[in-house]
Image 1 (cartoon, rainbow, N blue to C red):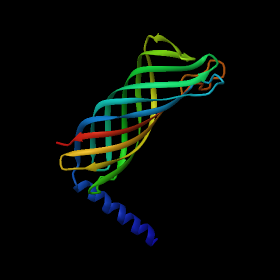
Image 2: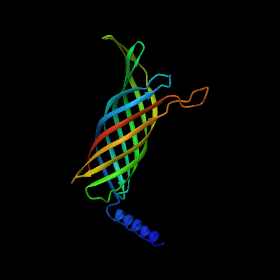
Image 3: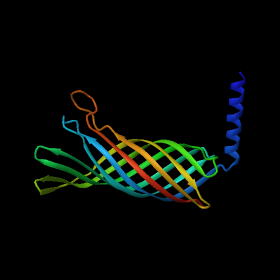
Image 4: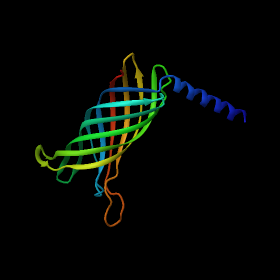
Length: 204
């Protein structure tokens, strides 16, 4: 019983501290990084692997120094390769990515605030190219058309607090399970991109 009372008092005190330390704060800035990833087309061959890059602008809002909402618009490249019978094949794409993430943040800490988040990202895949290399000879074919997919996002990071700026190193797993197979009704394609990012934000 004493433990329950102590825990309740601690949580209540902590919540009051959050409320009186500033109800709402905002930030705007840029985020950039790399995105290693894997793509499994479920064709009984090895998965394709590769690394791209991303850069974009975003904004965030903290409520009671406890809950954060972040929205970004990013340009990103994705690259996936594997060795096949005819040689090494690579698929490269240009994308626009729109992630939205809600996080629980330890905003009461004075210098560094860690956070955990979940969210959803919409990826609009534009033009790309397919490249086949074999014995020093490379053949490239354009990939035309657009494709839109939704990703489930799991993330963790930390916010380093300066006077009017925030620096946020962040890791997110962006998971897409593709479309249903018409015969088995199972998810066949699997795509996971891991974003290693640094956000640089100004706080008014």
